[in-house]
Image 1 (cartoon, rainbow over the protein chains, first blue to last red):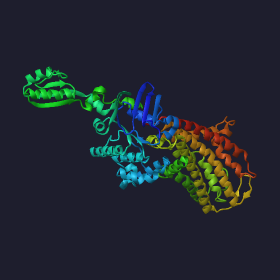
Image 2: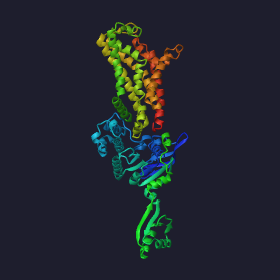
Image 3: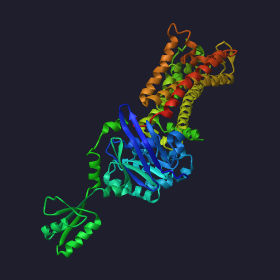
Image 4: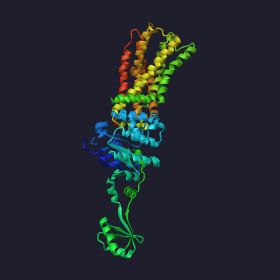
Length: 313
Length: 270
């Protein structure tokens, strides 16, 4: 087994005529990651995933899965890889079980023996004899996960797996993703739902208008979102004077009687001791951080949708 | 191995779809309707091959029905599935489902082509068998008068029918190949079905227009008559061998183009 990362995209570009749907995207997903691929609708997430799966040809650049490029080695590049883009699709006139058997045969391995097991995992065994045409959206999503699990994947690529699900369906799907991640499957999850990414992912990339504007650990991203601390004291004037003279602490303009401070954790901790020694009581000391949503909106310029680009894709 | 899996599942999918039963059903119903109508009428299709002998033996029925069905009946039945076989996968989004498994695109395409050809052959064989049975029930399983005016035994006639079905299948597979090509390129089932039928009709039309004599032997429509060679004594192999190589071109060229498109195409939101 190669040591190549599960996903390594380098300089991926996809153009449709005048429109550049994906513009020099670099992505690296390491083993064990639950990697969130975030972006507004139409930013290029699905197009990127299609290139990773070999469904569309990049105009430029390369996409490798465990070191293999689908364009170079064909379907063998997808060994150990499973997933779906734009929602899983099945033959509506075949039952759920038959759809899975078909896909198991298309995998050429021993996957056929795992059909019942994966139906059980996604809790669809009691509806497995029914035609997929009669399935709800949530059931199709779960069947999509089952179809992916048939391949015993080491990497799962999931394109907005909770889109269109009701709250209970979303919760179940996230639990399933977390469970799969706990079992050691690397997951690349595209989403425009920030709470989903915050809940599930350890690393993220943010794509905007086809370009990656952030890639790194989610924790590091959130750490950059720290804007300071809000402090409320029993004697605001004395507290302000003390803060102004305290090394490592910057006092920011504030609109009400509270003090707004910026400094690292050690400096703020030392300040609280100093305030205490000066007989100044603290009634509140609250870290102020931007939410992932605020960060995201700041990075993407408040963009919500740019449907033309994805439509072109 | 991979092609065998695709082929088997393509057949299973065809057996789960109404259009397959519609096509095969019509192919098998036509000879029955034909026989029933002739049982209640005194006239017959006197101006076509074997038409005068239609009531002499049930063996003449499938030959006459094959002749009638070559104009647009069997091409339509063929187009119904051939035009849909790739386009429906694009339309339903299932193409991306199967192309992200372990089989190469070439294997998937080959399996689909084989399944289409199987359906096409099944339609002709079904038509011929039902024709023999229905005709024989009406007029008996008796010796067949050949186009040379000599009689051959019923068993020999059955052998001639089998050979004729094989030769007749060639241009029909040519129609199917064109349908698969349109299905692959247009990604639109209705457009591919109608386009294939129009193309088959155009081939027939070219064959009857004045001034087309020089190209007539190489038109696809003409090859539907190649089986007449078997009904002569001795057999005339010239039209048969010409049908083999002409149809090979009509089958290979569209399939080669469709293959290239299928293997290289972007599978996006169709």
